[in-house]
Length: 573
Picture 1 (tube, rainbow, N blue to C red):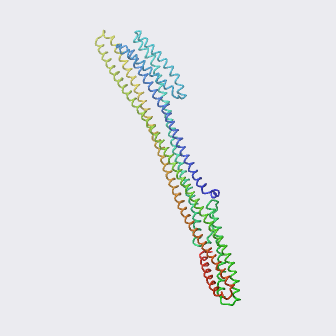
Picture 2 (picture 1 turned 90 degrees about the vertical axis):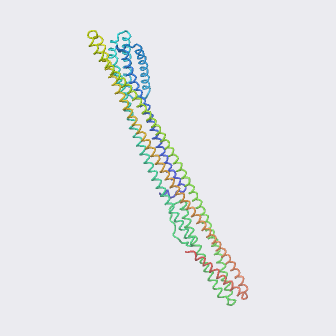
């Protein structure tokens, strides 16, 4: 504390500015750090999880589509050659799309579990393609029923395992997305707590230091001002100032104590001299009617008076010099006060710059909120596309149901035909089985679409929470901006008070200038007194002829002494 007292006023104000600048930098760095971390988390969530789920779902849809088209090609009941060629070409196209989607997924950042599943997936995919191609080869050779049975029992199990692995990979990405969401929520909570704590500490510490500095400075300046007021009123024996500090105010206090001591000594000397002058003047007046012998005594007394006047003149010169020094010191105080006022204005400017930094942080939070909203819109569009695929699957299921009904009707008609319709009944039974399998496949695809929609809704919920956390971050930075506005207002109030102090010092300087003018008047009176004593001394040499003139001069001297004593009585020793 004593070290703070001994610092210069400029160093104290610079210290307060540095403390506020440190807290401002801490708030700005925290906002930047957590904003960058949240942005990186969102990029990671989109690139490594959402896109991965999209590519996996596309792979599942394409492989299931290839399965449906292959069944259509291998179906013995399908006699439309043109449609078979079209379905075969479409199945090749969808298989290429499935490969492309899975290759995109492999290009993403994969976990160890995903890296462990992918080799087995590729083996199953390769086996499925080979078995499917064998089934197609049997169909081209005219063995349609064998081709269909081979595909169902040899190729389709590999496809089922492929889809199971795709579901596992999608679940892993969903778990990673959930972990990223929880981490983002934790980071946002940490950022909010840190910004709130740092802002509160900055506000409380700034207010405490500002109020303490203001009270500390104002109290000491009030003591100095009170002492100067007492001196201006003529009380040159006020209580001494006890300011234990080596700054400008402490130096002023010590100079004022020294000045009052010098003034008291000077006034005592002037009072003593004026008393002597008054006594000598009375004796001179009383002895004006005496003889020449008395005139010699008067001459001796006048000589003493002349010597006292010279001492008085020297004392007045010394007092005038001291008062001039005091006036110069007060002018330096006024200059220092103006410098303090300028530093306060610079402090207000720095607080304004801090507000600009907080405004920049608010704009960055708004940008983050826009990015999160865009990501939520992309996920919503993904859910809409999943609904469209569900509608297509429902259409396939309806067609399979109608095919089943037609197969049942064909079996009934074959039964009516008797022995001639038995072969047709077998075909109708196979068609019915194919229709049932198509319905089961459509149901499985519908379940997968439902899972995709569920995952998409979870992603939308996570993005909504991310938007909420971004809004919370924006509100925290807005609150920091309000706090810095309050700090700037407090600094402006300090600058206003310092300006008032500067005006008070100007008035004190003006008062000291009046005191200096009064001391010059006293000096003039003393010089006149010395001149009069010389006139009286010359008159005593003329002996009795000049006694009347001596009496007149002694009366003038008495009046001057009374004026001098009256002026001295204005000072309270």
